[in-house]
Amino acid sequence: MRILRIPHTLPVLLLAGISCVTGPAHAAGPDFQYVGQDDRVHGLTAPRGCVAAEGGGGRAVTNATRGPATLHQGPRCSGRVVGTLRPGEVAQVRPAFASVAFPVTG
Image (cartoon, rainbow, N blue to C red):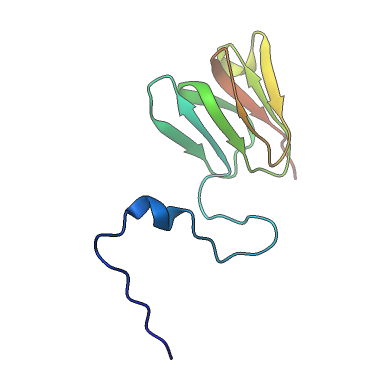
């Protein structure tokens, strides 16, 4: 057995890019993630139906759900559709969105 020693001076950012997974990404964490207008990262796990975008979504968005995510400018999935992200899609979104509609599956 080999022991790998990592010096304490190694920047943490270098470690963040290391992945031991092959094939499609199966990262633990939120299924839908976005950076809000409040400059915070928000995440939703197993979202269904219409969900409010806490912090006002409006920057980088990642849809790791199994279905499309439709971004709405108004609350309760009302108003203009800002965009729709396919499963696995990552995008920069402008203008801001207030809610997101996800498919409801049995």
